[in-house]
Length: 203
Image 1 (spheres, helix red, strand yellow):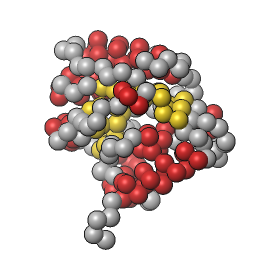
Image 2 (tube, one colour):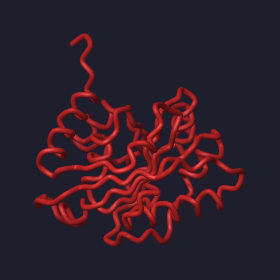
Image 3 (cartoon, helix red, strand yellow):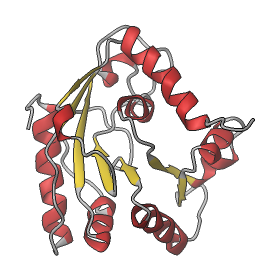
């Protein structure tokens, strides 16, 4: 169908769901840039997190996803439709060079990358260690990072659970982190910012 946009349809549906069922609230909207290029990073404690992020932001996001999920019926269809970037896991490997190139191409075209830097689901709010991928892309492409805390999803759909509960979701958006030359320093800044945000600090 001409003019049909799958991503926009998904976002609109999720937005209604999260706003009216789970009363999703966004704090720090003034910190969100009008456009890209941009890298958004967030904590990850529930399978709902990616869906919540799609609903929360007006612009289109490009996600990373485990390569094997592209082969799962239904899931793979959605991932391909939203143009997610496959990454290697122990279940299936893909070219790391292509993954990096695809991500940098998104940023070069003023797109927005969405990264969960912890690399998996965690039951605790405190962020102790993250992977350096977001910092690498930020430094390499000279693109800012927007830290975001997702609060409440771990109680609504905890790790290992598949039946959501009633609760409230808060998206706490922090201040932009501008790239520096050192990846390690950038990573420390991201960890520090995310930890403050998950505790409820507005900035």
